[in-house]
Amino acid sequence: MNKYSSYDRDLMSPKDALQVLVEGNTRFVNNDKRQYDVLITRNETKDKQQPFASILGCSDSRASVEFIFDQNLGDLFSVRLAGNIASKEAVGSLEFSTKHLGSKIIVVMGHTNCGAIKAACDQYYEGNIGEIIRLIEPAVAAEKNILSKKDRGSHNEIFVEKVCFHNIQYQIDQILKQSSIIRDQLKEKKVALIGAVYNLSTGIVEFDLDNVQM
Ligand SMILES: [Zn+2]
Image (cartoon, rainbow, N blue to C red):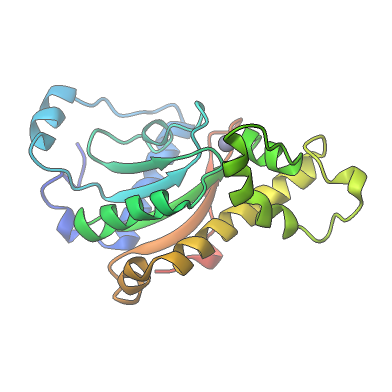
């Protein structure tokens, strides 16, 4: 059973929340997922939610957060948009989950082989997709080691990987810039903020532990 039921999450610290995510991902990687009784959980959570973590992740069908962190209904507040972009609406959702639902950690999670990142690398602006690409553009510009125009595109895996990392940092910066609510909660140590990359082939989520704000 989950050590932290939906009723005693006030006892969890941001550090505990990170640990629960790490352990859940390890189970997922090892194909050792928990069995959840959905009837019990649905009943437990029907009147109240108290997710312990908020994930700003990509909409990619292979990056489902409940799967990759092996969590249940009511555990994760999932904000997913292509390219894990911190749009105003996404930041508002994160504010809601941390300030009003008591979530202990915000994870900004990119992933390998991300279509949105690749589209940004190729400056693909068709239709409303352009609205997403514009929010990733600064991460493409932030890559200053690969300068040759012929190397700056989705055909170059290394370029795509570097832009993915820059994008995680850029979206974290955007959250901090846009949200006094989240800045205050970080100051009060009520919540942590961390970047992470999910590897589609290994299943491993690598957290950026050197840059965690906790
Ligand atoms: Zn993606």
